[in-house]
Image 1 (cartoon, rainbow over the protein chains, first blue to last red):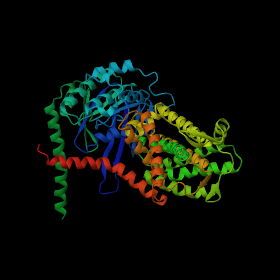
Image 2 (spheres, rainbow over the protein chains, first blue to last red; image 1 turned 60 degrees about the horizontal axis):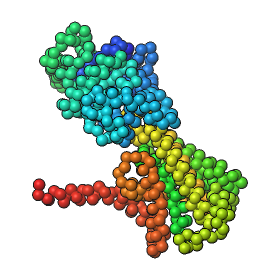
Image 3 (cartoon, rainbow over the protein chains, first blue to last red; image 1 turned 90 degrees about the vertical axis):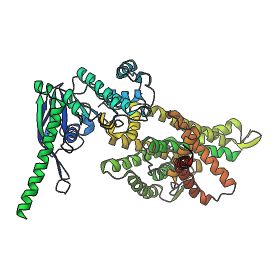
Image 4 (tube, rainbow over the protein chains, first blue to last red; image 1 turned 135 degrees about the vertical axis):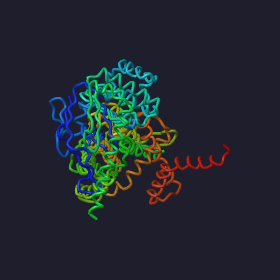
Length: 270
Length: 310
């Protein structure tokens, strides 16, 4: 279970660039659930992931994973609970290390790095099976530097690495946004398969309304640092891409109205 | 011949330096200028302790430990206070200049006691007599002992470094230099890895300084100037010898070979009339050329390619 309680985060407070990225966000996600998060630019959806992964300190509020209050934990300490895949397909793997070495580092997620040889007792057979699942012939490339692989291949492996140790939480941050359509499709089908088999509470941020409509069992739309819409169950299942697009226009209209209203009021007082 | 063997021995001592610089520059992609301070630090500690009657092995290990501490301080300044890595290194290097003078009590200290090399030199002399003939030339046997000792040290250090880089910890260090964000996401403190890595790098640099002092029979406060550039020259030269390989072992062998080759080239250049005072200038130019050269050549090639018919 993942619980955010009254989480607030303002970037650059007191300056012209002040951004209220998260304004009192409270969300509770059931264990093993798959939540898709959408939102306009600057709505706070990525900040939400940053807050969970520990990329920065919160101004207020708390974050719980099961019974552990992780609010004050540094990023690396949270990692044994949280698997992550980034938007940048190259961000999740170390290019100079081989595929096997990357997987081995991931298999010891959150543990002390000891003086034991990294690849001793490596579960190569198991990894080969996992890599074969992706369907890109990666099972024969365990000993190649991962830097030789394409973005889609690396993102697929990052996804495997993120789920290898069965973390409590899986964060996917627009993880197909930087891929070509074919690779994005592959990564999404792998995501669906891995999430179905995993017991992790999954949070996926996406820009794709198609993904938002078809994936997950809950949908949260963020707007101006707040939860704008939160649907789950049957309602989520019946949500269509066009309804989501309509929702987006609505959010944009709200935005414009606020600005126009401000301008109007300002004109009155000038 | 005698000159050749002495040059090889010094080259191998700088091979240990190259191992340290390989770690900071290639693994962490961070040219750590602390080396200019930790090299004489290793020398100073060893010279001081040898003067105090401490046995050579302990004195050498103490020198190494000093270097590790210096590297750890650079790393800690960099990660804890978010000071630019280069500046952190400059600060520690500058501070070490005074520290080294304090340790030695003078800017130059001769080493009169037995060194870590003495048993090898005596052994070789006992075995072969005062002089040995190699390829028809007569050389002092003690030089052969020196060559053997330095080969053993650089060999052991190199093998240990390769094995280390393949451990969980070593691989985590490589990943820190490669993709720090990924390693944090995998639950390892990249701060800790950086401190540890710079400590290890400077321990090797200080070991090199300690061995160099024992070989030359003195430690000098000025002996660190340009050490980082020398190390970079070795690593870069080694890489061009070996080519773009992906095996760590080969890259490390390359770095050591680069150090030896560089030393040989220097000896030849001086023999051919290069003023020793110009050495640092020439070294810097060589390193610049080695770094900039390949990209420059490639861009020249591209420009020329533009004019070619499509």
